[in-house]
Length: 197
Image 1 (tube, rainbow, N blue to C red):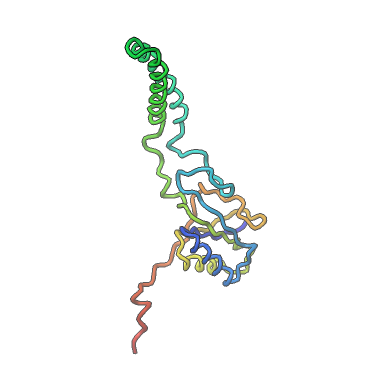
Image 2 (cartoon, rainbow, N blue to C red):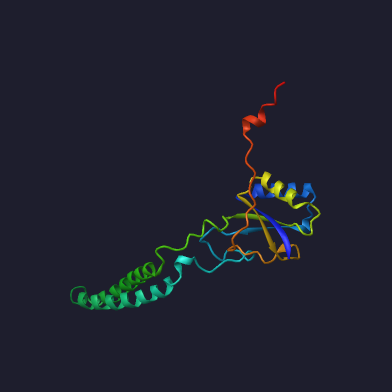
Protein backbone atom coordinates (compact mmCIF):
# COMPACT_ATOMS: atom_id res chain seq x y z
CA UNK A 1 0.00 0.00 0.00
CA UNK A 2 1.09 3.53 -0.76
CA UNK A 3 0.26 6.83 0.87
CA UNK A 4 -1.43 8.95 -1.78
CA UNK A 5 -2.03 12.70 -1.66
CA UNK A 6 -4.65 13.83 -4.16
CA UNK A 7 -6.09 17.18 -5.11
CA UNK A 8 -9.41 17.66 -6.89
CA UNK A 9 -9.54 20.65 -9.26
CA UNK A 10 -12.62 22.14 -10.88
CA UNK A 11 -10.82 23.39 -14.00
CA UNK A 12 -8.22 21.94 -16.35
CA UNK A 13 -5.88 24.94 -16.06
CA UNK A 14 -5.75 24.62 -12.25
CA UNK A 15 -5.00 20.90 -12.55
CA UNK A 16 -2.28 21.60 -15.14
CA UNK A 17 -0.81 24.30 -12.88
CA UNK A 18 -0.75 21.86 -9.96
CA UNK A 19 1.09 19.24 -12.03
CA UNK A 20 3.63 21.81 -13.20
CA UNK A 21 4.25 23.10 -9.68
CA UNK A 22 4.55 19.56 -8.32
CA UNK A 23 7.20 18.84 -10.98
CA UNK A 24 9.04 22.03 -9.93
CA UNK A 25 8.91 20.82 -6.30
CA UNK A 26 10.64 17.59 -7.35
CA UNK A 27 7.77 15.13 -7.85
CA UNK A 28 8.62 12.72 -10.67
CA UNK A 29 6.16 12.06 -13.52
CA UNK A 30 5.99 8.35 -12.57
CA UNK A 31 4.74 9.36 -9.10
CA UNK A 32 1.82 11.42 -10.50
CA UNK A 33 -1.38 10.53 -12.29
CA UNK A 34 -4.39 12.49 -13.54
CA UNK A 35 -7.98 11.36 -14.08
CA UNK A 36 -11.54 12.70 -14.10
CA UNK A 37 -14.08 12.25 -11.30
CA UNK A 38 -17.66 12.06 -12.63
CA UNK A 39 -20.28 14.62 -11.62
CA UNK A 40 -22.71 13.22 -9.00
CA UNK A 41 -25.55 11.40 -10.78
CA UNK A 42 -23.58 10.85 -14.01
CA UNK A 43 -22.47 7.24 -14.08
CA UNK A 44 -20.15 5.00 -16.12
CA UNK A 45 -18.65 7.82 -18.21
CA UNK A 46 -14.94 7.08 -17.77
CA UNK A 47 -12.93 3.87 -17.84
CA UNK A 48 -10.61 4.95 -15.01
CA UNK A 49 -12.11 5.79 -11.66
CA UNK A 50 -15.11 3.48 -11.85
CA UNK A 51 -18.59 4.32 -10.72
CA UNK A 52 -21.87 2.72 -9.86
CA UNK A 53 -24.54 1.97 -12.47
CA UNK A 54 -27.30 4.10 -10.94
CA UNK A 55 -28.02 6.63 -8.21
CA UNK A 56 -29.14 5.22 -4.83
CA UNK A 57 -32.60 6.79 -5.13
CA UNK A 58 -33.19 5.17 -8.54
CA UNK A 59 -32.88 1.56 -7.38
CA UNK A 60 -36.09 -0.27 -8.21
CA UNK A 61 -37.35 2.31 -10.69
CA UNK A 62 -36.80 0.06 -13.73
CA UNK A 63 -38.97 -2.78 -12.39
CA UNK A 64 -41.71 -0.34 -11.42
CA UNK A 65 -41.59 1.19 -14.91
CA UNK A 66 -42.13 -2.22 -16.54
CA UNK A 67 -45.06 -2.99 -14.23
CA UNK A 68 -46.54 0.44 -14.91
CA UNK A 69 -46.18 -0.05 -18.68
CA UNK A 70 -48.01 -3.39 -18.59
CA UNK A 71 -50.84 -2.08 -16.42
CA UNK A 72 -51.06 1.19 -18.37
CA UNK A 73 -51.06 -0.67 -21.69
CA UNK A 74 -53.89 -2.96 -20.56
CA UNK A 75 -55.95 0.00 -19.38
CA UNK A 76 -55.18 1.75 -22.70
CA UNK A 77 -56.46 -1.25 -24.69
CA UNK A 78 -59.69 -1.22 -22.68
CA UNK A 79 -60.09 2.54 -23.17
CA UNK A 80 -59.26 2.18 -26.88
CA UNK A 81 -61.84 -0.55 -27.34
CA UNK A 82 -64.49 1.74 -25.88
CA UNK A 83 -63.31 4.65 -28.05
CA UNK A 84 -63.19 2.47 -31.19
CA UNK A 85 -66.96 2.74 -31.44
CA UNK A 86 -66.61 6.50 -32.04
CA UNK A 87 -63.09 6.95 -33.51
CA UNK A 88 -62.65 3.64 -35.33
CA UNK A 89 -60.21 0.73 -34.85
CA UNK A 90 -57.13 3.01 -34.84
CA UNK A 91 -58.12 4.14 -31.34
CA UNK A 92 -57.13 0.78 -29.79
CA UNK A 93 -53.35 0.82 -30.55
CA UNK A 94 -53.13 4.58 -29.94
CA UNK A 95 -54.78 4.29 -26.53
CA UNK A 96 -52.63 1.24 -25.68
CA UNK A 97 -49.42 3.17 -26.55
CA UNK A 98 -50.46 6.23 -24.54
CA UNK A 99 -51.47 4.00 -21.61
CA UNK A 100 -48.18 2.06 -21.68
CA UNK A 101 -46.10 5.26 -21.81
CA UNK A 102 -48.06 6.93 -19.03
CA UNK A 103 -47.96 3.75 -16.94
CA UNK A 104 -44.19 3.39 -17.32
CA UNK A 105 -43.65 7.02 -16.33
CA UNK A 106 -45.89 6.74 -13.26
CA UNK A 107 -44.32 3.39 -12.36
CA UNK A 108 -40.75 4.72 -12.62
CA UNK A 109 -41.59 7.75 -10.52
CA UNK A 110 -43.30 5.65 -7.86
CA UNK A 111 -40.30 3.28 -7.81
CA UNK A 112 -37.76 5.95 -6.93
CA UNK A 113 -36.87 6.66 -3.34
CA UNK A 114 -38.55 9.83 -2.14
CA UNK A 115 -35.74 10.51 0.34
CA UNK A 116 -32.48 8.94 -0.91
CA UNK A 117 -29.37 9.12 1.25
CA UNK A 118 -27.63 12.46 1.07
CA UNK A 119 -24.28 11.51 -0.42
CA UNK A 120 -23.11 14.92 -1.56
CA UNK A 121 -21.85 15.69 1.95
CA UNK A 122 -19.25 12.89 1.74
CA UNK A 123 -18.73 12.22 -1.97
CA UNK A 124 -16.21 14.04 -4.07
CA UNK A 125 -17.37 16.79 -6.39
CA UNK A 126 -16.71 16.54 -10.11
CA UNK A 127 -13.35 17.59 -11.46
CA UNK A 128 -9.85 16.57 -12.40
CA UNK A 129 -7.95 14.58 -9.77
CA UNK A 130 -4.17 14.90 -9.53
CA UNK A 131 -2.79 12.09 -7.36
CA UNK A 132 0.77 11.68 -6.09
CA UNK A 133 2.33 8.50 -4.73
CA UNK A 134 3.92 10.07 -1.67
CA UNK A 135 5.48 6.77 -0.56
CA UNK A 136 7.78 6.50 -3.59
CA UNK A 137 8.31 10.25 -4.05
CA UNK A 138 11.31 11.90 -2.47
CA UNK A 139 9.20 15.01 -1.78
CA UNK A 140 7.70 15.27 1.72
CA UNK A 141 3.96 14.68 2.16
CA UNK A 142 3.52 18.14 3.70
CA UNK A 143 5.18 19.76 0.68
CA UNK A 144 2.99 17.83 -1.80
CA UNK A 145 -0.16 18.84 0.10
CA UNK A 146 0.95 22.48 0.40
CA UNK A 147 1.73 22.78 -3.33
CA UNK A 148 -1.69 21.35 -4.20
CA UNK A 149 -3.45 23.66 -1.76
CA UNK A 150 -1.71 26.69 -3.25
CA UNK A 151 -3.17 25.83 -6.69
CA UNK A 152 -6.80 26.35 -5.65
CA UNK A 153 -8.26 22.85 -5.36
CA UNK A 154 -11.79 21.98 -4.34
CA UNK A 155 -10.22 19.64 -1.78
CA UNK A 156 -7.04 17.75 -0.96
CA UNK A 157 -7.17 14.25 0.49
CA UNK A 158 -4.87 11.58 1.87
CA UNK A 159 -5.47 7.90 1.14
CA UNK A 160 -3.83 4.51 1.43
CA UNK A 161 -4.05 2.69 -1.88
CA UNK A 162 -2.40 0.66 -4.60
CA UNK A 163 -0.14 2.41 -7.10
CA UNK A 164 0.61 0.31 -10.17
CA UNK A 165 2.35 1.38 -13.39
CA UNK A 166 2.08 5.08 -12.55
CA UNK A 167 -1.64 4.99 -11.68
CA UNK A 168 -3.69 4.97 -8.46
CA UNK A 169 -5.18 1.63 -9.48
CA UNK A 170 -7.71 1.04 -6.70
CA UNK A 171 -9.16 4.57 -6.58
CA UNK A 172 -12.83 4.36 -5.55
CA UNK A 173 -14.84 7.51 -6.34
CA UNK A 174 -17.54 6.34 -3.92
CA UNK A 175 -15.23 6.03 -0.92
CA UNK A 176 -15.38 8.73 1.74
CA UNK A 177 -12.38 11.02 1.16
CA UNK A 178 -10.04 11.65 4.09
CA UNK A 179 -9.73 15.39 3.52
CA UNK A 180 -6.68 17.34 4.59
CA UNK A 181 -7.64 20.65 6.18
CA UNK A 182 -7.04 23.65 3.95
CA UNK A 183 -4.99 26.46 5.51
CA UNK A 184 -6.90 29.66 6.27
CA UNK A 185 -6.66 32.19 3.41
CA UNK A 186 -4.37 35.17 3.90
CA UNK A 187 -6.31 38.42 3.63
CA UNK A 188 -5.41 40.37 0.49
CA UNK A 189 -5.00 43.57 2.49
CA UNK A 190 -2.48 41.97 4.85
CA UNK A 191 -0.55 40.47 1.95
CA UNK A 192 -0.39 43.75 -0.01
CA UNK A 193 0.71 46.08 2.79
CA UNK A 194 4.29 45.63 4.05
CA UNK A 195 4.84 46.01 7.79
CA UNK A 196 5.66 49.58 8.88
CA UNK A 197 8.70 50.76 10.83
